[in-house]
Length: 340
Ligand code: PHE
Image 1 (cartoon, helix red, strand yellow):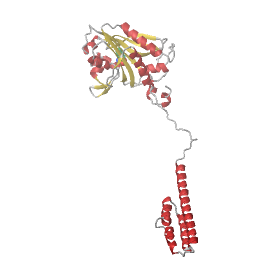
Image 2 (cartoon, protein in one colour; image 1 turned 90 degrees about the horizontal axis):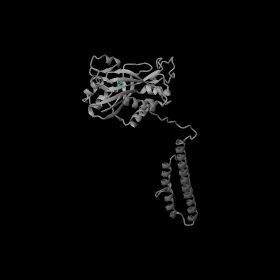
Image 3 (cartoon, helix red, strand yellow; image 1 turned 60 degrees about the vertical axis):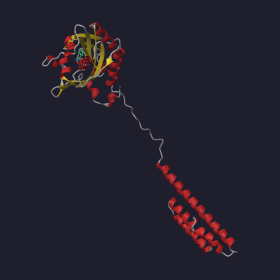
Image 4 (cartoon, protein in one colour; image 1 turned 135 degrees about the vertical axis):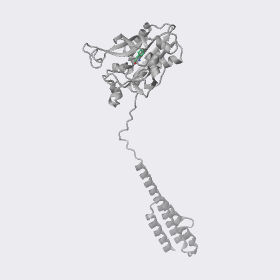
């Protein structure tokens, strides 16, 4: 019996030595200590041991059982600790590594400028309207008193989309669309993109305008001057030199363009390439809405009068931030855009 116990003990120790996983160790617990385990069977075998030997053999058996039990527990403990160590090593975070930077984006300078301009006119009681970028010939030209073959169509180098449609060359067609839908009194602005076949330091094939117009029974050129002077002072500051200059647009009569003193060269006599040597930079066209336009939308030109203007957003941004080339806005150079 003692020899059998010693063999079982040796087997148990050797098997434990070889066990590589918790499952294997659990298997050994069953093999030696389970209900039909080798040591459990040995306990049952005690009754065949002569009574005189029983206490000594029993004590030896208990020692073997205790030893195997302890070793199984400690093998399990060691395997679990090793597993935990492996897991921790895998999840280790080096807290001394530099963090990952997330650079938040921001609105493009043109969007910022557009928002600022819209806010100013909304503050003056204007509401905001929008129209399509792809326009028909009628809204972009004909209804604005520019009939087919009118030489004024040459003023704006149009990008056509098929026979009938075009990329709007200005935001003025939104005047027509709003007046077709609504009755005066009206105070409306229409911010948006415009397109012309044009490309130099002050012209981009895609650019933005804020169209504005006001229609009521007694709107005068004085109202036009007052509203535009106030708005431009809010945009550029009270000291900026402004100049109203007589001009021509088919859809306004009389018409005026407004220039801002060139901030790039300070309006000095020799000028610079942005103001083309004049010391002034044109930023808007305006005038009293032509009676032919009122007739096109079914308003009585005897009963109503109004003014309209179209403000060039990129020009405003260039002047405010002393940017000398309009193409910088759309070159998508992050080093430029990040500055604003
Ligand atoms: N639509 C004109 C342009 O783009 C500007 C303008 C708008 C002029 C409204 C007069 C009235 O040049």
